[in-house]
Length: 431
Image (tube, rainbow, N blue to C red):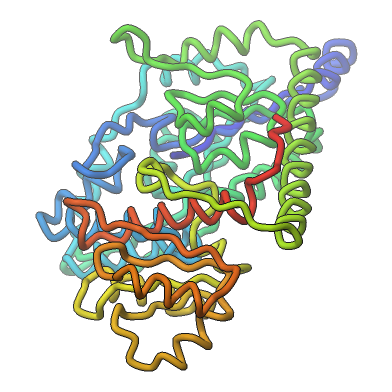
């Protein structure tokens, strides 16, 4: 999940050929983990692989693996404020479990480049391209690639410091250079080299955390990329028929690029931005219309428990008042949901047995959507809930077999249903 950028300026190239007075420059922005280095280490139960993060967790034993999974689940359910909070929590876990410099350095040295990477940088025209590495991973891994591949600019999100006496992890330095932060670093270099932001750079990445920066680049590549990234980029290079993807495929495309490719890429980028803005605006207009019209019921479907929602539940709760009725305090999901949304006053939890009906009636009367646990709420209680909240949808939700104590399927189902109810209906897909 690291980013690579290449910068190139065609107008400068013409100028340079005629007068020979300055370097023609274009910036290729590249990711590190998964793009430059092979990310083939994956803990069972997690949906992505990594070069360093997961091997570090595995080196710390079963407790390291367990806590890595827990941190991953917290990130996926939107319970970190931002990416740096996630990285900081991972650093604290590494420190508490006694990560040592010898282990870190060993894993750092074992990281392998993806096929074709070394050849790509050996052949790269340094008069035409200025390579840049931007990573949501370790600065140490970025620095290794810089030294071995002759890359002048490199930014990592995290750098570790170890104690000189016992070699234990002591501190870390954090930099906001992932997700939207990646483009900020590229922007500074574009300004530094007096390049044109619309034309003079290329992006290469692999993860969904690269979607923001890829959507801003006129030419972009997904290298064995996440499907969300493939939907944004202009080119993608993938493993085929058992043959690993190679950076040689990127070289072939770069060699054939013309100025018109950059112009077309920029036009496509601008069209995507306009479509996204229009879609958001339509969703807002639709939401206002829905509030005025009679509400068409939305149903909870089995796929809602599994499908990644368009918006995290925490984001929906910024605008809408929701209630969940029926979980008992003795149920682990009750405690988990209460902790997840402790800072979200728009989310209320009520037990199956209404101890104070007046209080419950008053609270539910102000809710816009109500879920109830079908395993704990009787039919008469459902009718009682409906009487407390006239006009608000009241929908039953299940705790799936095998996931009775897991809140993630519940959160996904609620988020998917609420997204359809409040945002997606009557919105035409302009894309």
